[in-house]
Image (cartoon, rainbow, N blue to C red; front, top):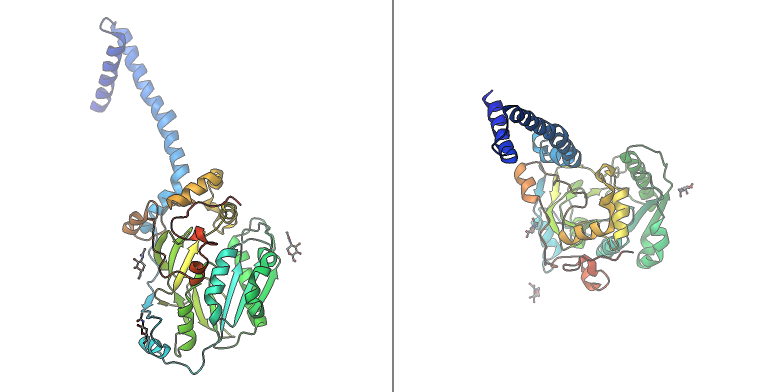
Length: 383
Ligand SMILES: *[C@@H]1O[C@H](CO)[C@@H](O)[C@H](O)[C@H]1NC(C)=O
Ligand SMILES: *[C@@H]1O[C@H](CO)[C@@H](O)[C@H](O)[C@H]1NC(C)=O
Ligand SMILES: *[C@@H]1O[C@H](CO)[C@@H](O)[C@H](O)[C@H]1NC(C)=O
């Protein structure tokens, strides 16, 4: 009651200012009622719609922010310390990891599902080249979200002459099932990759790298694992996470890439958690590291999580360019973390990094061609 009284009292004051002193009791009452109406109107026709519109715009953010309440973090990995220096012998390196050196190295197969990352594939294959027996690449004319796409690798195969004698290439037609969960098409393509690996001649105890094109193990990591005996049958690789280029170093927590000692009865190509051990500091994961804005747009549309492109202005080239130069998020999302501390710590743009130390050698040897991946070059070509 007292709340209602103070409300009308305030209204009264406003009316007095508007109407002056010499008003009748009746008009003052009318004014009071009108005043209450305006408040009610404001609540019903402004505040509530703004609130609902706010939820529409930011609902996803709110649920992500509250994630620590409804989801607990996955079981932590057992992190294996990683020792490396170019001047230390392989025998010593194996010993530091508690392994023995082999008389000859294992054969290594690098298998990827290719989408449209031509430049990153070039970096990857040049980095790994000295240690790989067969490069296995599968591409489809369908994205995981059933959008038709050109066979970009087939069209650019001439750029990869250096790899040709060690390449097993496969193409698979998409099924184009409208409205299907994108993870089904992805699983279908990974099964085809298993078959392609057998065609490539993989045998038991060969090493198999399972990772996306943009998850690049460092060459010395692969060399260590092929030369040492007694390494775990499956080991994940902890990679440094970068976004847009090596200027934005997000964290060191990429874990999906894994190395398998191939077991013909058991090994299936997958991109999820398959073991509890992870080798520290084993390479780079460069997400959305594209040369052209058009490639960003394509990837945003082809992404398995299509629900992230909630508004069409997200695909506006000028906005994308601004987001890249700020180190902000293309989908305007809250960081996907499991504690409030980490979420808050990671909110806002990624700080710029000016370190180009410990990057793939091929990138530095061809810095002019891949300038956009190096610090200080966020402007993209429209393509
Ligand atoms: C590497 O080893 C060589 C020869 O043993 C030595 O001369 C050189 O200083 C070493 N380099 C580093 C960086 O430790
Ligand atoms: C995709 O490839 C398959 C197999 O080559 C072909 O039959 C199909 O017509 C292609 N679809 C599109 C949309 O290119
Ligand atoms: C990643 O790890 C390196 C070396 O372990 C460390 O120097 C760097 O600060 C870490 N970066 C981030 C963003 O966590």
